[in-house]
Image (cartoon, rainbow, N blue to C red; front, side, top):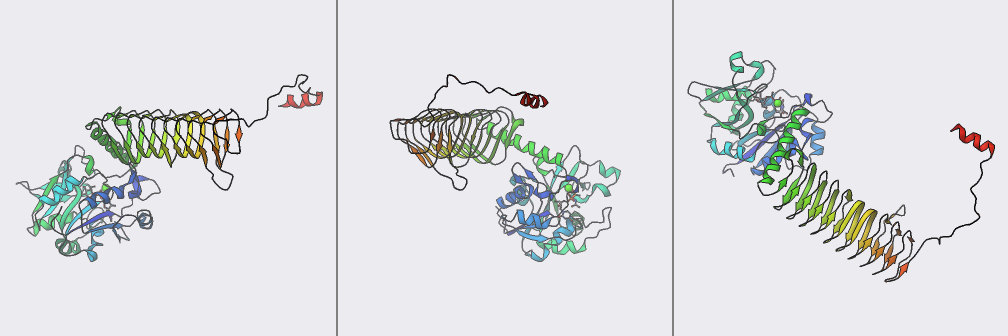
Length: 466
Ligand code: UD1
Ligand code: CA
């Protein structure tokens, strides 16, 4: 952590024209968080005294949708360049602060690189994060003198053919003292190709004033890549998920294909977990040892125990799944659900706000909502808890070892007693007593002399028209 007071400025006023969407650029989402959230969270990890976000294009919307961020908002009404953007923060900046400038559209910059930059830049010096790119097109080029010191940055549009061959680029991330910014920013001019006030012009000013300029190399290209269009966004997104997959693999988690693995939130996984292809993790997910997740599952805010089997195409949100449970294939588990040990939730079963007791089974085709189900209960195919009367939701209680026959409706509020049997096809409107068979359906009868209706000529004609 820095031993000096630190202010971080995040530039986020640019338009992002090339995104071609209606959304301000920094509100685009990368792996479950907006670009701006990612940069601000990285900034927070450095424990600065202040974080300023310079907003301009779509500022109102950005500020509204990102109002949960603990930052100070600064307006840049007209976007006259990166130097002009930083200038808008000057009235707020304390003179004795070190300043770190980040870009709102460079989402994967790492805490380590920024720490290295702050540590390696002496007080009163200027530090830059630089990178060597195979394809440096579009970036400002780092100009060094004969002894290898950085002396200037030249923008792509202002560069000579010779300068365009330079592969060392400016990532845009700069650290400098507030005092120097007060001195240099008012002197910026916009006599360049883009008629903008370039922040990068302060490098030449620093050199002229005898202030040393140092470069710190980024660890990888992706961390300094900006997002300018949707395909760049998708490339960084994929890079991010792949990195996370490799990190998990290093901890003994089997990820069947790191290119088909999406981590859009936080994931805590024990070793010996196997994750098949196309699984999406959102929010906070934790998974215990020896659990397997089948292909095409979506898991959001779920706590999963050990030795659990989640089979293909299951969607689970806001739930707790205890050890040795078996879920899916094609299960839908909605918020408020707690599946206890060794319970089974099978094919095409939807659960909402259910406590499902130990070793209870709902093997097929059921909707169980707002229910408390005891231990060793068996719920037959096609069972429905009728929990909604059009106005209010009501609870169903099914006690231990009860057996619900197929295609039954339990009209809530209702209780099925311990060890009760419900005959298949029943519509249960009153509590079913324990250990008795309850049948609630019309008695079957057959009509021996029944004949199907004969169609009259005119009806036959009509049906022919169809
Ligand atoms: C800038 C750098 C370039 C560097 C590149 C790295 C300058 C002059 N050039 O170029 O050397 O290689 O980034 O990606 O600094 N912004 C504002 N207000 C403005 C203009 C920009 O807030 O008036 C913000 C943008 O939202 C963006 C960042 O500043 O987050 C960079 O702006 P952009 O226009 O993308 O700069 P580049 O031309 O790419
Ligand atoms: Ca850019």
